[in-house]
Length: 147
Image (cartoon, rainbow, N blue to C red):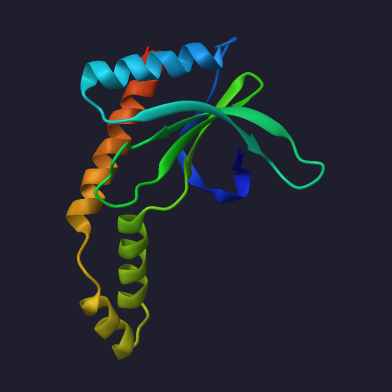
């Protein structure tokens, strides 16, 4: 079971659906990733939205099967007739890029030095972003968002 507090932001805008079945959507994502050569593990799970009185909602989890470094996962959360698309977990390249940028913009000499010592993970970040983009295009195609 996943926890909402571990979500790291929106992947794309939520969409309103008319009775999309979670298992059918998961199966369509599996078929689409296989047909398009997008590496992905897809499973159906649940996510909690709070403590003792929180809600439990079904979700689809899409993760990279063997990322070269840790990637964010995708959660497609079913909230009634709305599907929310969230990043989940940890992305090493995103973290490194954000820390390098924060160090560079700190306005201190020590920050500039720390930024120069951090490894450049821009290529890894681009690779991860391409994977996310390919999945978002697939979701849009399956859910007919481009019509």
